Structure formats: structure tokens, C-alpha cells
Length: 64
Image 1 (cartoon, helix red, strand yellow):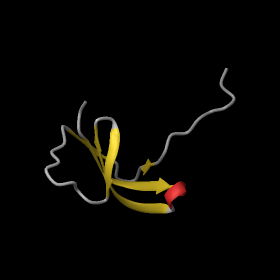
Image 2 (spheres, one colour):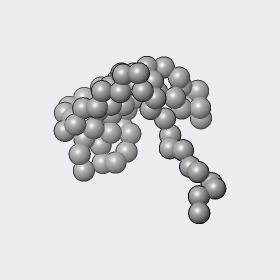
Image 3 (cartoon, one colour):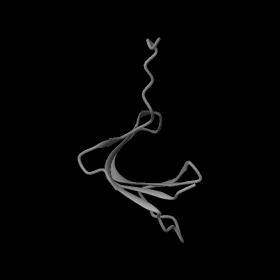
Image 4 (cartoon, helix red, strand yellow):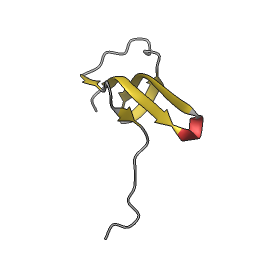
């Protein structure tokens, strides 16, 4: 699985009371760190999320 770095996005996570701009680091399909770059992390892909919101997925419960 690719290692992904999402930079400069507004990270919103109500469950953990987070609402601020920063970076997310993803490896193996899971978030491994928020805001602080993990040691020895080299991303395969960097996504610039400036002026975008990064948050847990939305679910449309009315889908048919």
C-alpha cells in the first residue's frame, strides 16, 4: 500500500476535538500520525489539501 502525506488541510475530528490546519500521514491504509512527521516516513504521494477539509467519512443513510 502506498504511503500518503496530506499537507495543509483543515483537519476536523469531532471525536477527538480537533479542528486545525496540519498534515496527516497514512501508511498501510491507516493514519499513523497527525501533525508530526513520523521518523523514517517517506511518502509515495503528497496531496496538497490547502483550503480543503480533511475529516472522517460522511455516510448518506438515505442511499438506495
